[in-house]
Length: 153
Image 1 (spheres, rainbow, N blue to C red):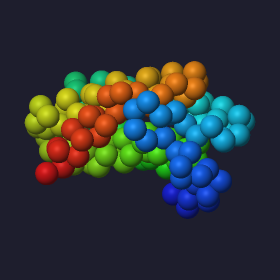
Image 2 (image 1 turned 30 degrees about the vertical axis):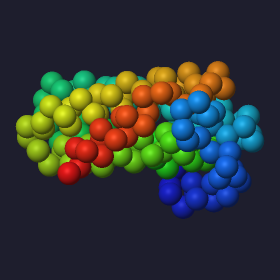
Image 3 (image 1 turned 180 degrees about the vertical axis):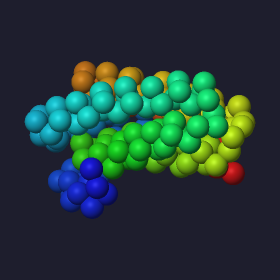
Image 4 (image 1 turned 45 degrees about the vertical axis):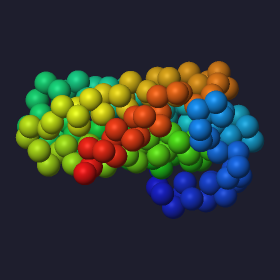
């Protein structure tokens, strides 16, 4: 989904209803159920794509196709999560997208980059559960975002 379209939908979700700190709802309570279900289907696809890309990248760091697949999945997440008020998930997607882009420039990424991307990918199923169950933001999200940002320099 384009950033332009995500920006339009963001207008329909009040800023105070967007996700944030752990303990706050993962998505806005005001999100339309149909829109939420569409997002959850997309999130399921994103999780599958990024998990496959991460495993392939770990097996062959030199192949740029694997990091491109991760970048694409995280980019989609960054753009679509705000539509359902999951601004913290969008922030995770943005940080992971940037880290994956930087990793793509290296044939031998350092261990902190690998670990940060692994942590981001590991959080996505937790986000899926949190959104489906109307649960709070997964606790490890702020740490994962910080770790991803530290890899950027």
